Image 1 (tube, helix red, strand yellow):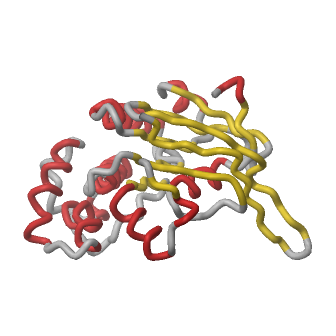
Image 2 (image 1 turned 45 degrees about the vertical axis):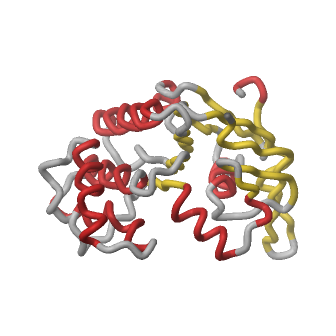
Length: 227
């Protein structure tokens, strides 16, 4: 079953008196159980595509369905609920709360969904063990390496058991060895569940090579030769 179905996506932005078309009729179908890289030159529309898939942005025209939900028809509150419960986000700079411990950072999505810390802790600890940080549950971000912080971020992205994880340059702030370890973990996460999709934007050609599929975006369109 397709996790992402995008058809003829157009996204235009106004920049002063100019209209910039970040996406220009992009169409794409992605199934679960895959680790997919989105590559292309700067300004090609990669991040715009990722933001639309994650309901962080809306297309000017075209249609987008993610995990069976038509995103174009969502209200702001529904889009917020969708992002919080159906999508996991992983960022280049980790986006961890410095005053919280590793397990509290992992539990944060559940707290935002009005669950108590006490109820969230067992699941958060389980996920930290899953990403190899069972001995770091009480450490704060300042006490962790870059690779460990990214592993905490990956664990956090899994807290609500989403079918789709969106990773924006997840190795961009890591050395090559640590980045390779994070990519291996993301591949494992994608393949653990038959209907889970990990979609990663990257400028790193080596990172793309470890993925199951590479999607190239050029001038706002999906390059069918790499689709």
